[in-house]
Length: 287
Image 1 (cartoon, one colour):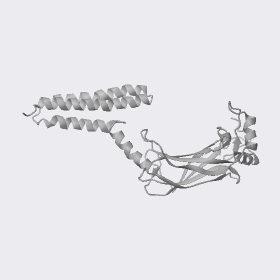
Image 2 (tube, one colour):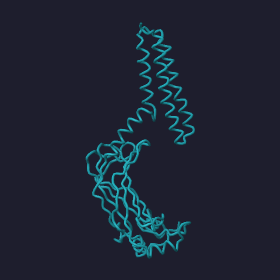
Image 3 (cartoon, rainbow, N blue to C red):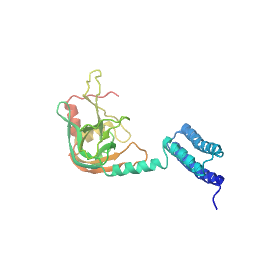
Image 4 (spheres, one colour):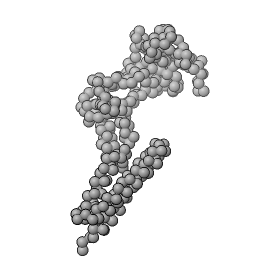
């Protein structure tokens, strides 16, 4: 016995209504998690819009002479449009994220080298980390590198290493329309990241007696270690090995960062960087 047109409409309508609610509630949940209170209210309205449109179109199709498939076709068209318009969806987001995650996990790193970072005057002032990366697919990837001292004595924000500016990439990875670096597949990129100890700052602009490129000392009392303690460690502290970690991600909230390479590289003494700064006449930062 053939199914009546009204039953096709009801069945397709119920299935699609549940689908739209699922997509919309996913968007509401995501916005709530991100703390977007006002957008959460807008997202609730987004749930209502396709459902209202669906049943409005179904009401108009009742007098159509087309077959029962018209309800499925019309509903499918609304579902596709709704999916394309949503900023996040359980379907497209999951598919795209899985695709990006596979690419991130397949990035390879190698030829990792750490060496003293020279100042303009040639004195060792920090650490320069360089490494190669190859990407399996064209795309925008977020690259980050960190250094951590093996010696616990240096596990303090004034004595640890932090980035100096961004990452230098050779050959150049030009930005895409969103301003993100766009990397080509199967191209060997040489990355370079410069690190300064936390007690040392570099002037970006000419200011009073300091010129751009000059260094200044940021030595402060902290709850964990007073200024005298910091200076004593810089004076008498030992050489230490450094752990490095190179991580790859994307701009997607749903893609986990992957560690492309990690290990121990190089031995340095933070006190030597302090001595170089003093040799170059670095004064107090004054901030």
